Image 1 (tube, rainbow, N blue to C red):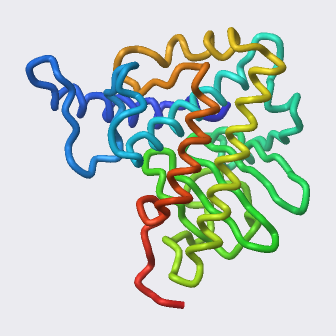
Image 2: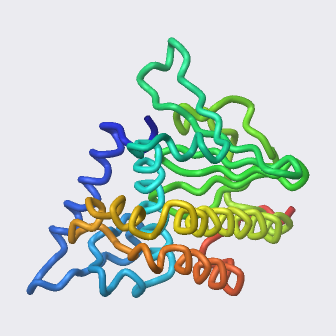
Length: 239
């Protein structure tokens, strides 16, 4: 299974532990620039800087994909058309990779450590789960499944000439995620998503209620479109 492995669980625990150590007077505090923030209450999930919100949203989404895979009635990702790629014999320590082919030679690739969105004509972006800082590549497809982050192509912040296409690809990915959650609600019901979030809402993780999940992604897309520099960074090379 993806999204549920010891390395990921350890990283999430370390992230939460850092937040616990930062608390004082029963009020959560956030270290400046720390993008691994997860200690946000239900009331504060929509507050804070946009990058922190984005990290929280993507982490919660990855959790939900893992729960959707383990759905008692059947693996939801397979039901909606994803292909599950099992690791080869020499990579048995890795989890399965899930790939969805989209129209117009586009694709989505899901891993516990992030998500890749590729477009054959424009290139691809990878969103690291714990950073939410899009990394751009001219490759619209992956040469091999990303069993680990070492299998990913060379990824970097976009150059000035690549910034618009990187933003467009990131927005397309966000819209795909938003529509994924809309479909979950329409076909499986809002109670299903509420149930999958029960264990995620532990008082430490940044939490967005099921009813606001899809709309939170939509708001994120608006903010990224208006403020791309807050997310994309910029490669120093101009072309």
